[in-house]
Image (tube, rainbow, N blue to C red; front, side, top):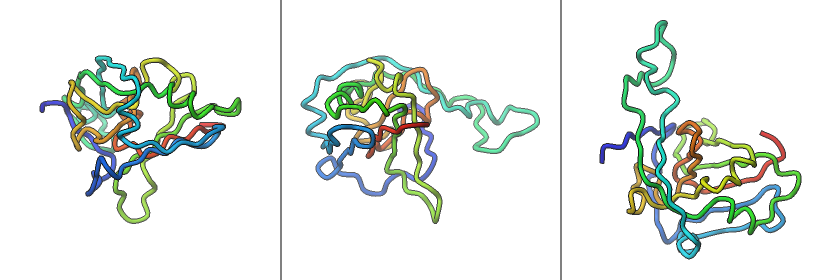
Length: 174
């Protein structure tokens, strides 16, 4: 309950385990559409990971910089579990042209603000510790932490671990 919460946009108003889907597409041989039930049937991998917002401590900078004026506290460590992203990408068949993997969440964006999207290099996406996390500390993710699934890119800033994951797209470039 003490793990920090940071959102780039607004949390999705409605989320349902039954209706949620994850699309996997782009530079792949066989695009996929997966449900939470599909993910639960896959082998689960667990690891303890520390997530930190890149803006942690920003409020202490002089001169001040724009953004949420975090003092200290935008860092947390938890056990995350879920299928390896690598296994899902291998099932989809990543083409040789796939160099980066993009994550899009279901964040609700105001007005004409573009959707919240981040990408990581294909090598990081295929790392055995990069997950489609569905659990945190052995319990299903809460809405504040990305229910029903979030990307988990250990060793990268928290923004790379996109919450409310709805799309994974293999791209030819960053």
